[in-house]
Image (cartoon, rainbow, N blue to C red; front, side):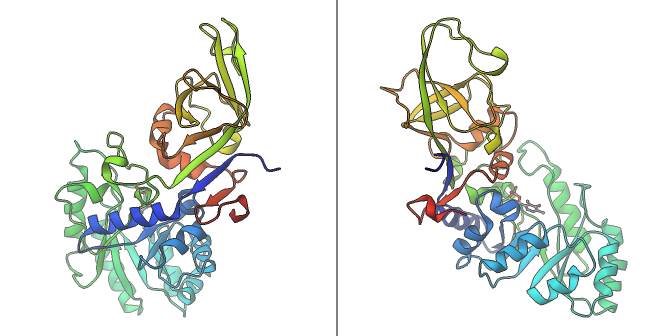
Length: 365
Ligand SMILES: *Cc1c(COP(=O)(O)O)cnc(C)c1O
């Protein structure tokens, strides 16, 4: 009998969310960002579900692009971090992958190859992580064009698009527009999920929605629901024990919580070994049989405890949603001092992904 802990993935919700991104993108097209195993949802299943709607995928690295091909996709795949060794340039060329060039050594690798992919050039407009400075572009483009390389477009990435009060995004956008002005025939791409919802933000030719596809919010202060997004993952488990605590009894490691009176509590078969955040403390919400409850004490590796006050007749076997439709992943993340991105991508291999098209854990990935 399998452990009753799994992630239910609603592929229809991902398609719905992609369509919201595409609508927000307006005349721009939206490439679906499916890096980090489709933000934890299973890259092959996510790519297959989106294949009919999207024209392009984006991932971090070559391994992820190959997983998309293995799932049967025929679309171009942008490698946001480019390639990590010279020989991979030729593989990109053969597979229809479009690596980003963010450093000079990648341009050297590309120019040394016979089988060349189309490439994107990363422009550093103020994130200061990767990319060429605007003043470095003319010499780079000249060198690539002389070498016969096909540059598809330019991209940049925003540092603070999720912060309404910041004008950093506008400054980065202006910097980008100026930097790429000499090459009006090339594609331009800047927008992550948050940028789709910024009033007046130019979205250029291609947007790059990631987190919103999975129904989590890119903003700290705006819920996914308020953006019209549907949660794609429900992290579910069951109660494996129901117990009554006497007043003053502690629960779990370190005795960080004590029963204020007689308390009915449940033990859930999920913990940080599954990717549930250990930093989620007492008071973090969950749902038992559709009733909201809160965590008590510390999260263990394989289990956690909830206060069952308010749940009628709780019993072992009752269903628990740790995040999903009733408790958003963003709410849990807030309690753990992090963001939904980290929880979704951090779900471990121990947790089977069960797809909405399958009724049974036989359809796992
Ligand atoms: C991950 C990533 C995105 C998607 O960002 P979200 O905030 O998840 O929408 C877009 N562009 C680049 C370069 C990325 O690395």
